[in-house]
Length: 384
Image 1 (cartoon, rainbow, N blue to C red):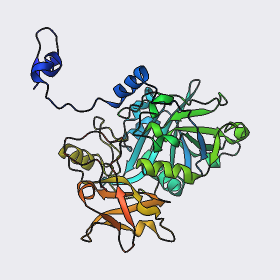
Image 2: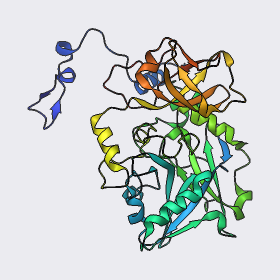
Image 3: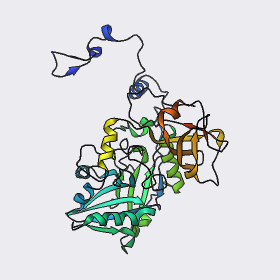
Image 4: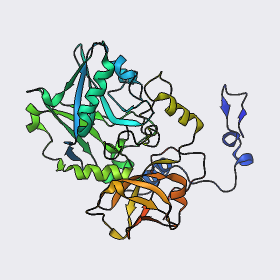
């Protein structure tokens, strides 16, 4: 029950003003950050930890540079996000769609300013780099925009790195996480700066999707010896893939096949990659209609393989997740060791008593990502 209080110029909740009258007998547990404050003040059960960062060179990702006075005008009509956000933040996440409203390419877009020179970098999957360049040039028309493949600029090549703390994924739902890096707010796309000392000439960007995904670092090949620092562990891309799969974040053409998935099913809205206030762009009509009807039955979700099972020598794109009755509830988009992600029917998967990989004696557990916003529907958070 919400009422208007005459002592304040805003709507207030009477539960707050008159707790003895309106408050129910059984109260929900306090928010995690309040629990953390309590332990800090009255106990020593929460131990501090130090972030242990990993650095991974993303050889599977490529960079394009767009330069010219009409760059933002071009991108504004092609991407799902609002390009004007780059006026107030260094990076955004966005998707390129086809005319049917299906995802063609996923991308991170960086704003780089050097003096009066403003450049826009687009990070994309290396496998579809040439297709994206062609896509941009088709709609360029007479706009004053130069599209450059960084790898083709001799002497100006840039290596793309990601820095993250993999340990956060393991303890995401525990209080200890906030002890080392401070409280994380997943409902915004504001990101802190890179917390390690690097060459000041290197460009770093907090991942606009999730804090747990770390920071992108643009390292000119001429300065490759200066990064990463010696106290940072260097890992292969498999480590970053495990991080994404544990979080339930799809990336690249293998996990988001061109023309086969919709932006809301790809969690583009939850990852701050879609603006529903901007003007028209390619694929906007279906995306907006789906959003306003509020019906998204399938989404990219993480799953785990039980009993230490590992999928080997199998094409994950052909695998399906089924319930005990054999009904398909999802398609596998990628696996690594005991983790995977798939396009899964949310309610049916979370309520199913058991889930298995079709034609394989492998049982899986599907979990609703912690960073999804709280919904009005009464869905179970997890199911075994």
